[in-house]
Length: 173
Image (cartoon, rainbow, N blue to C red; front, side, top):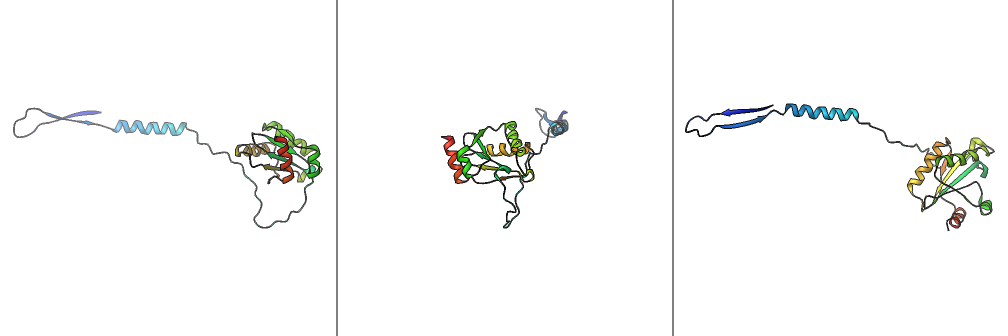
């Protein structure tokens, strides 16, 4: 604790005793270590949630099979938090157009499940995600999370084709 040490001067006149005050800092240091220990034990250290992306091997790879329109579903991520999907080719998309949904995991998972169930070859069913230039990163991450919730391992990220972009631009007007 605190100590008061009195020293007397030797020699000449001594008018006043000089007192030196010394403070023992040991209890303060102990308290500091106790606080640090307390906060370390009560704090949760969490790992960031990261989703693994299956990237293709480097080098030229020839496609082994062509995926039919009914064995895939394409999601187009647009501006203003809008998402569209289709299961058509260039000719059919003009007739049927794009369908719109929201980023609710239940809706996207239901759409993916319905497309999977109606696919002729379920083993090659593929989800294709095509973000537009106006799409934001948060919506892309939400879409990847929705694919993960649907428990589908076969998906790809591609650029939007010119005929899809034309139909998309007609939809957002």
